[in-house]
Amino acid sequence: MKKRILITVCALLVLALVLGLCQAVLMPKYRENPEGALIGEYYAEAGEHDVLFVGDCEVYESIIPAVLWEEYGISSYVRGSGQQLVWHSYYLLREMLEKETPKAVVFNVLALKYGEPQSEAFNRMTLDGMQWSSSKVQAIRASMTEDEQFLDYVFPLLRFHSRITELKGEDFRYAFSEPPAVSHSGYLMQTGVAPMSAELADIEGARLSDYTLPKTAMDYLERMRLLCEEKGAELILMKAPTNSWAYWWYEEWEEQIVSYAEQNGLRYYNFIPLCGEIGIDWSRDTYDGGVHLNVYGAEKLTSYFGEILQSEHGIADRRADTELSERWQGRVERYHTDKENREGEK
Image 1 (cartoon, rainbow, N blue to C red):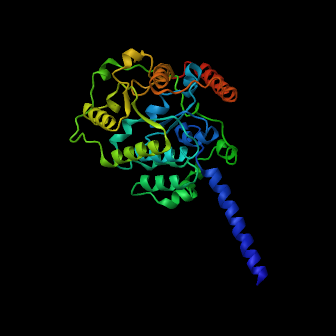
Image 2: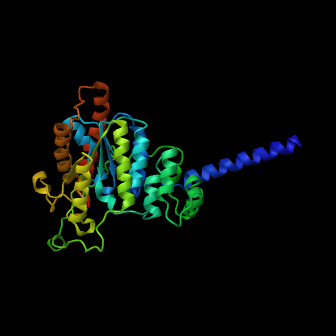
Image 3: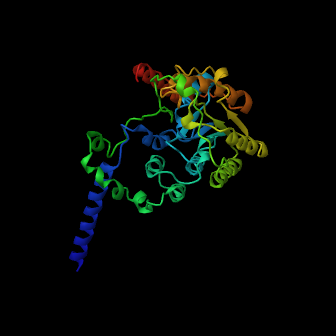
Protein backbone atom coordinates (compact mmCIF):
# COMPACT_ATOMS: atom_id res chain seq x y z
CA MET A 1 0.00 0.00 0.00
CA LYS A 2 2.75 2.43 1.01
CA LYS A 3 4.73 1.50 -2.10
CA ARG A 4 1.72 2.24 -4.29
CA ILE A 5 1.24 5.65 -2.62
CA LEU A 6 4.94 6.43 -3.07
CA ILE A 7 4.80 5.51 -6.77
CA THR A 8 1.69 7.67 -7.22
CA VAL A 9 3.33 10.65 -5.51
CA CYS A 10 6.49 10.28 -7.58
CA ALA A 11 4.46 10.02 -10.77
CA LEU A 12 2.56 13.19 -9.89
CA LEU A 13 5.80 15.03 -9.14
CA VAL A 14 7.29 13.94 -12.46
CA LEU A 15 4.12 15.01 -14.26
CA ALA A 16 4.17 18.42 -12.53
CA LEU A 17 7.85 18.83 -13.45
CA VAL A 18 7.20 17.98 -17.09
CA LEU A 19 4.20 20.30 -17.29
CA GLY A 20 6.17 23.10 -15.62
CA LEU A 21 9.02 22.64 -18.09
CA CYS A 22 6.61 22.65 -21.04
CA GLN A 23 4.87 25.77 -19.79
CA ALA A 24 8.15 27.63 -19.26
CA VAL A 25 9.24 26.82 -22.81
CA LEU A 26 5.88 27.51 -24.46
CA MET A 27 5.18 30.86 -22.79
CA PRO A 28 5.87 33.71 -25.28
CA LYS A 29 9.19 35.49 -24.65
CA TYR A 30 8.16 38.64 -26.53
CA ARG A 31 11.45 39.26 -28.30
CA GLU A 32 9.89 39.98 -31.71
CA ASN A 33 6.82 41.59 -30.15
CA PRO A 34 8.40 43.45 -27.22
CA GLU A 35 5.22 45.16 -26.04
CA GLY A 36 4.29 41.95 -24.24
CA ALA A 37 7.43 42.11 -22.10
CA LEU A 38 6.85 45.61 -20.71
CA ILE A 39 4.66 44.83 -17.71
CA GLY A 40 6.96 42.20 -16.21
CA GLU A 41 10.05 44.42 -16.43
CA TYR A 42 8.70 46.71 -13.72
CA TYR A 43 9.60 44.41 -10.83
CA ALA A 44 13.35 44.82 -11.31
CA GLU A 45 13.03 48.54 -10.51
CA ALA A 46 10.05 48.62 -8.15
CA GLY A 47 10.20 50.76 -5.03
CA GLU A 48 12.17 53.90 -5.88
CA HIS A 49 9.96 56.17 -7.96
CA ASP A 50 8.43 59.59 -7.33
CA VAL A 51 6.28 59.48 -10.47
CA LEU A 52 4.49 56.47 -11.97
CA PHE A 53 2.92 56.57 -15.43
CA VAL A 54 0.15 54.17 -16.44
CA GLY A 55 -1.62 53.80 -19.76
CA ASP A 56 -1.43 52.52 -23.28
CA CYS A 57 1.06 52.90 -26.13
CA GLU A 58 0.71 56.68 -25.96
CA VAL A 59 2.55 56.51 -22.64
CA TYR A 60 5.25 53.92 -23.24
CA GLU A 61 6.22 55.55 -26.55
CA SER A 62 5.98 59.16 -25.35
CA ILE A 63 7.57 59.42 -21.89
CA ILE A 64 11.26 58.61 -21.26
CA PRO A 65 12.24 58.12 -17.59
CA ALA A 66 15.96 58.35 -18.46
CA VAL A 67 15.39 61.88 -19.79
CA LEU A 68 13.32 62.87 -16.74
CA TRP A 69 16.23 61.79 -14.56
CA GLU A 70 19.00 63.29 -16.67
CA GLU A 71 17.33 66.70 -17.00
CA TYR A 72 15.36 67.00 -13.76
CA GLY A 73 16.50 64.30 -11.35
CA ILE A 74 12.96 62.84 -11.36
CA SER A 75 12.84 59.11 -10.62
CA SER A 76 9.99 57.60 -12.62
CA TYR A 77 8.66 54.49 -14.30
CA VAL A 78 6.25 53.93 -17.20
CA ARG A 79 3.96 50.94 -16.55
CA GLY A 80 2.39 50.89 -19.99
CA SER A 81 1.18 48.15 -22.32
CA GLY A 82 -0.56 47.81 -25.67
CA GLN A 83 -4.21 48.92 -25.51
CA GLN A 84 -4.02 49.13 -21.73
CA LEU A 85 -7.63 49.69 -20.67
CA VAL A 86 -8.54 51.75 -17.64
CA TRP A 87 -9.25 48.71 -15.43
CA HIS A 88 -5.84 47.32 -16.42
CA SER A 89 -4.31 50.62 -15.31
CA TYR A 90 -6.23 50.58 -12.04
CA TYR A 91 -5.13 47.10 -11.00
CA LEU A 92 -1.55 47.69 -12.14
CA LEU A 93 -1.51 50.86 -10.07
CA ARG A 94 -3.01 49.11 -7.06
CA GLU A 95 -0.25 46.52 -7.28
CA MET A 96 2.47 49.18 -7.59
CA LEU A 97 1.18 51.21 -4.66
CA GLU A 98 1.67 48.16 -2.48
CA LYS A 99 5.36 48.26 -3.39
CA GLU A 100 6.12 52.00 -3.35
CA THR A 101 4.75 55.44 -2.49
CA PRO A 102 5.15 57.87 -5.40
CA LYS A 103 4.42 61.56 -5.12
CA ALA A 104 2.38 61.51 -8.34
CA VAL A 105 0.63 59.11 -10.71
CA VAL A 106 0.08 60.12 -14.34
CA PHE A 107 -2.70 58.44 -16.34
CA ASN A 108 -3.11 58.83 -20.11
CA VAL A 109 -6.82 59.30 -20.84
CA LEU A 110 -7.17 57.77 -24.33
CA ALA A 111 -8.29 54.40 -22.92
CA LEU A 112 -11.39 56.01 -21.38
CA LYS A 113 -13.13 55.60 -24.74
CA TYR A 114 -13.37 51.82 -24.07
CA GLY A 115 -16.05 50.46 -21.76
CA GLU A 116 -15.68 46.74 -22.47
CA PRO A 117 -12.84 44.21 -22.86
CA GLN A 118 -11.40 44.37 -26.36
CA SER A 119 -9.22 41.35 -27.16
CA GLU A 120 -7.39 38.43 -25.58
CA ALA A 121 -4.15 39.38 -27.32
CA PHE A 122 -4.00 42.79 -25.65
CA ASN A 123 -5.23 41.36 -22.35
CA ARG A 124 -2.30 38.97 -22.42
CA MET A 125 0.18 41.79 -23.00
CA THR A 126 -0.89 43.31 -19.70
CA LEU A 127 -1.95 40.39 -17.53
CA ASP A 128 0.65 37.71 -18.28
CA GLY A 129 3.47 39.92 -17.03
CA MET A 130 1.86 40.64 -13.65
CA GLN A 131 2.99 38.68 -10.63
CA TRP A 132 0.26 36.69 -8.91
CA SER A 133 -1.67 38.73 -6.36
CA SER A 134 -5.26 39.71 -5.61
CA SER A 135 -4.75 42.61 -8.04
CA LYS A 136 -3.90 40.22 -10.87
CA VAL A 137 -6.84 37.94 -10.09
CA GLN A 138 -9.29 40.85 -10.15
CA ALA A 139 -7.65 42.34 -13.24
CA ILE A 140 -8.16 39.05 -15.09
CA ARG A 141 -11.79 38.83 -14.06
CA ALA A 142 -12.42 42.43 -15.15
CA SER A 143 -10.65 41.96 -18.48
CA MET A 144 -11.72 38.59 -19.90
CA THR A 145 -13.61 38.56 -23.17
CA GLU A 146 -16.52 36.13 -23.62
CA ASP A 147 -14.25 33.50 -25.17
CA GLU A 148 -11.61 33.55 -22.43
CA GLN A 149 -11.33 31.26 -19.42
CA PHE A 150 -9.78 32.16 -16.06
CA LEU A 151 -7.92 28.84 -15.90
CA ASP A 152 -6.05 29.75 -19.10
CA TYR A 153 -4.32 32.48 -17.09
CA VAL A 154 -3.65 30.20 -14.12
CA PHE A 155 -2.25 27.49 -16.41
CA PRO A 156 -0.98 29.28 -19.56
CA LEU A 157 -0.01 25.88 -20.99
CA LEU A 158 -3.69 25.40 -21.80
CA ARG A 159 -3.59 28.49 -23.99
CA PHE A 160 -0.12 28.33 -25.52
CA HIS A 161 0.30 24.61 -26.23
CA SER A 162 -0.15 25.28 -29.95
CA ARG A 163 3.10 27.28 -29.98
CA ILE A 164 5.04 24.02 -30.00
CA THR A 165 5.33 24.28 -33.80
CA GLU A 166 6.61 27.88 -33.56
CA LEU A 167 9.36 27.50 -30.96
CA LYS A 168 12.64 29.33 -31.44
CA GLY A 169 15.98 29.31 -29.68
CA GLU A 170 14.92 32.13 -27.38
CA ASP A 171 12.06 30.02 -26.02
CA PHE A 172 14.56 27.54 -24.60
CA ARG A 173 17.24 30.11 -23.76
CA TYR A 174 14.92 32.20 -21.59
CA ALA A 175 12.67 29.46 -20.24
CA PHE A 176 14.24 29.69 -16.78
CA SER A 177 16.14 32.98 -16.91
CA GLU A 178 15.22 36.62 -17.34
CA PRO A 179 15.72 37.83 -20.90
CA PRO A 180 17.43 41.19 -21.47
CA ALA A 181 15.14 44.16 -20.92
CA VAL A 182 13.44 45.53 -24.02
CA SER A 183 12.47 48.85 -22.41
CA HIS A 184 14.13 51.72 -20.63
CA SER A 185 12.22 51.85 -17.33
CA GLY A 186 9.08 51.11 -19.32
CA TYR A 187 9.82 53.35 -22.32
CA LEU A 188 9.90 51.43 -25.60
CA MET A 189 12.28 53.19 -27.97
CA GLN A 190 11.38 53.85 -31.60
CA THR A 191 14.09 55.53 -33.70
CA GLY A 192 12.48 55.22 -37.13
CA VAL A 193 11.14 58.27 -38.98
CA ALA A 194 7.97 58.09 -41.08
CA PRO A 195 6.54 61.59 -41.62
CA MET A 196 2.90 62.51 -41.46
CA SER A 197 1.66 62.95 -45.03
CA ALA A 198 -0.22 66.08 -46.05
CA GLU A 199 -3.17 63.97 -47.21
CA LEU A 200 -3.57 62.16 -43.89
CA ALA A 201 -3.07 65.37 -41.91
CA ASP A 202 -6.34 66.70 -43.31
CA ILE A 203 -8.41 63.64 -42.33
CA GLU A 204 -10.46 63.89 -39.14
CA GLY A 205 -11.93 61.08 -37.09
CA ALA A 206 -15.24 59.59 -38.14
CA ARG A 207 -18.38 60.98 -36.53
CA LEU A 208 -19.75 58.94 -33.63
CA SER A 209 -23.35 58.27 -32.73
CA ASP A 210 -22.59 58.79 -29.03
CA TYR A 211 -19.65 60.69 -27.56
CA THR A 212 -20.37 59.79 -23.94
CA LEU A 213 -17.37 58.17 -22.31
CA PRO A 214 -18.45 54.74 -20.99
CA LYS A 215 -19.63 54.57 -17.39
CA THR A 216 -17.40 51.56 -16.68
CA ALA A 217 -14.33 53.49 -17.77
CA MET A 218 -15.23 56.56 -15.74
CA ASP A 219 -16.01 54.41 -12.71
CA TYR A 220 -12.51 52.92 -12.84
CA LEU A 221 -11.01 56.38 -13.25
CA GLU A 222 -12.84 57.37 -10.07
CA ARG A 223 -11.49 54.26 -8.33
CA MET A 224 -8.02 55.28 -9.45
CA ARG A 225 -8.53 58.78 -8.07
CA LEU A 226 -9.71 57.46 -4.70
CA LEU A 227 -6.82 55.00 -4.53
CA CYS A 228 -4.30 57.79 -5.16
CA GLU A 229 -6.02 59.93 -2.53
CA GLU A 230 -5.83 57.07 -0.03
CA LYS A 231 -2.12 56.50 -0.73
CA GLY A 232 -1.20 60.19 -0.71
CA ALA A 233 -0.25 60.37 -4.39
CA GLU A 234 -1.42 63.17 -6.69
CA LEU A 235 -3.33 61.88 -9.73
CA ILE A 236 -2.46 63.79 -12.90
CA LEU A 237 -4.26 63.25 -16.21
CA MET A 238 -2.59 63.63 -19.60
CA LYS A 239 -3.37 63.19 -23.28
CA ALA A 240 -0.29 62.43 -25.34
CA PRO A 241 0.25 64.20 -28.68
CA THR A 242 -0.97 62.60 -31.87
CA ASN A 243 -1.68 63.94 -35.34
CA SER A 244 -3.69 61.07 -36.74
CA TRP A 245 -7.31 60.23 -37.46
CA ALA A 246 -6.47 56.71 -36.23
CA TYR A 247 -6.33 57.92 -32.61
CA TRP A 248 -8.59 60.93 -32.99
CA TRP A 249 -9.35 62.82 -29.78
CA TYR A 250 -12.81 64.32 -30.00
CA GLU A 251 -13.67 67.68 -28.49
CA GLU A 252 -16.68 66.04 -26.83
CA TRP A 253 -14.33 63.65 -24.98
CA GLU A 254 -12.08 66.54 -24.06
CA GLU A 255 -14.96 68.41 -22.46
CA GLN A 256 -15.83 65.42 -20.27
CA ILE A 257 -12.24 65.02 -19.05
CA VAL A 258 -11.89 68.73 -18.36
CA SER A 259 -15.16 68.65 -16.40
CA TYR A 260 -14.11 65.58 -14.39
CA ALA A 261 -10.73 67.14 -13.57
CA GLU A 262 -12.31 70.42 -12.46
CA GLN A 263 -14.91 68.67 -10.30
CA ASN A 264 -12.24 66.62 -8.52
CA GLY A 265 -9.44 69.15 -8.26
CA LEU A 266 -7.13 67.31 -10.69
CA ARG A 267 -4.64 68.74 -13.17
CA TYR A 268 -5.13 67.66 -16.76
CA TYR A 269 -2.68 68.27 -19.60
CA ASN A 270 -3.80 67.80 -23.18
CA PHE A 271 -0.56 68.03 -25.16
CA ILE A 272 -2.22 67.91 -28.60
CA PRO A 273 -2.78 71.69 -28.88
CA LEU A 274 0.65 72.28 -27.32
CA CYS A 275 2.62 70.43 -30.01
CA GLY A 276 3.92 73.68 -31.50
CA GLU A 277 5.06 74.96 -28.12
CA ILE A 278 6.68 71.63 -27.31
CA GLY A 279 8.45 71.68 -30.67
CA ILE A 280 6.92 68.52 -32.14
CA ASP A 281 7.72 68.29 -35.85
CA TRP A 282 5.42 65.76 -37.52
CA SER A 283 7.81 65.42 -40.45
CA ARG A 284 10.54 64.06 -38.12
CA ASP A 285 9.17 63.21 -34.68
CA THR A 286 6.93 60.24 -35.55
CA TYR A 287 7.80 56.73 -36.70
CA ASP A 288 4.36 55.82 -38.09
CA GLY A 289 2.91 58.81 -39.88
CA GLY A 290 1.73 60.81 -36.89
CA VAL A 291 0.07 58.12 -34.79
CA HIS A 292 2.88 57.85 -32.21
CA LEU A 293 6.03 59.76 -31.33
CA ASN A 294 9.48 58.38 -32.06
CA VAL A 295 12.38 58.92 -29.69
CA TYR A 296 13.05 62.43 -30.99
CA GLY A 297 9.49 63.54 -30.33
CA ALA A 298 9.34 61.68 -27.02
CA GLU A 299 12.46 63.48 -25.82
CA LYS A 300 10.80 66.85 -26.54
CA LEU A 301 7.56 65.90 -24.77
CA THR A 302 9.39 64.42 -21.78
CA SER A 303 11.54 67.51 -21.37
CA TYR A 304 8.47 69.76 -21.55
CA PHE A 305 6.45 67.65 -19.10
CA GLY A 306 9.39 67.25 -16.73
CA GLU A 307 9.52 71.01 -16.20
CA ILE A 308 5.79 70.98 -15.39
CA LEU A 309 6.14 68.09 -12.94
CA GLN A 310 8.93 69.90 -11.12
CA SER A 311 7.62 73.48 -11.13
CA GLU A 312 3.86 72.86 -10.88
CA HIS A 313 3.74 69.63 -8.87
CA GLY A 314 6.84 69.90 -6.70
CA ILE A 315 8.52 66.66 -7.80
CA ALA A 316 11.96 66.88 -6.25
CA ASP A 317 15.35 66.66 -7.94
CA ARG A 318 16.94 63.56 -6.36
CA ARG A 319 20.33 63.63 -8.07
CA ALA A 320 21.94 64.38 -4.70
CA ASP A 321 20.96 60.86 -3.58
CA THR A 322 24.22 59.07 -4.33
CA GLU A 323 22.88 55.52 -4.31
CA LEU A 324 19.88 56.36 -6.49
CA SER A 325 22.05 58.42 -8.84
CA GLU A 326 24.37 55.49 -9.41
CA ARG A 327 21.48 53.28 -10.49
CA TRP A 328 20.04 55.94 -12.77
CA GLN A 329 23.42 56.73 -14.29
CA GLY A 330 23.59 53.17 -15.58
CA ARG A 331 20.10 53.46 -17.03
CA VAL A 332 20.86 56.80 -18.68
CA GLU A 333 24.04 55.40 -20.25
CA ARG A 334 22.17 52.35 -21.55
CA TYR A 335 19.49 54.62 -23.01
CA HIS A 336 21.98 56.75 -24.93
CA THR A 337 23.94 53.70 -26.12
CA ASP A 338 20.75 52.03 -27.35
CA LYS A 339 19.66 55.20 -29.13
CA GLU A 340 23.04 55.63 -30.81
CA ASN A 341 23.14 51.99 -31.93
CA ARG A 342 19.66 52.19 -33.42
CA GLU A 343 19.93 55.52 -35.23
CA GLY A 344 18.62 55.21 -38.76
CA GLU A 345 16.24 52.32 -38.10
CA LYS A 346 13.02 52.33 -40.07
